[in-house]
Amino acid sequence: MLVIGVIITTAIVLLRGEEDPTARPGPLTVSATPSTPSSSAPAPAAGGLAADLFEGDWRFKLGDVSMNATYAAAKDYPECGPVASAALDKKGCRYAAMGIHDAEGGKLRMLRIIYVFDSEAAATAAAKSAEETDFDLPTGGLVEDDVIGKWVTKDASKAVVVGFVTAQKGVTETTVDDFLHYGTADTAAALGFMDL
Image (cartoon, rainbow, N blue to C red; front, side, top):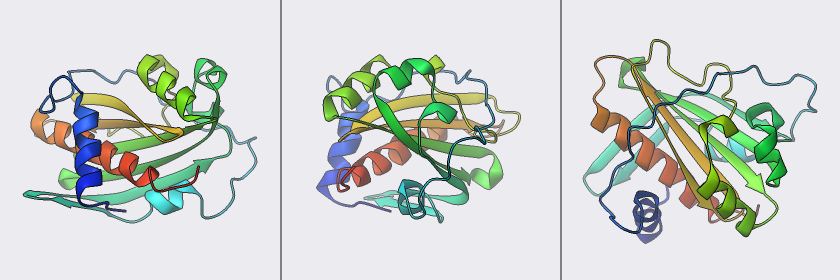
């Protein structure tokens, strides 16, 4: 799952913003209410995005940065409805995939959701206009008793990657920011090599 070298570096710089490449995400609190995915949706094909990008432990290394997270869950959605609002569907969202990883002894949870659109232009527009109300987080997507919650979006090819990181007391905000940045950028960079 790791993508190394200049591509991941570029993705991280783009994720941090063009104006200030060292900027970190703002204190955006995740307030979306987790919902149970619809059971009426047909089962997605085996071996989809969730399997390719999220199954297994997450191990990341770039220069002096080394991060690890333990696999918790992954799922493909044949449509966006179970993890997206009607507004996001109207923007052209076709299907989705999500992955959950835990770190810091279970005190931090990293949730990444990929929303795939009909075109790169639609994905870029959706990423720029994204609001918390656009996302219905899957059950178990947030760590229990969280005191810090942040999210960020990044467009990649025809997809939007939305990263959510929540953490319990005892986890620093810097640690949350690092998992949010590198986790989301890693996924976005990997998508750049896929034919969506």
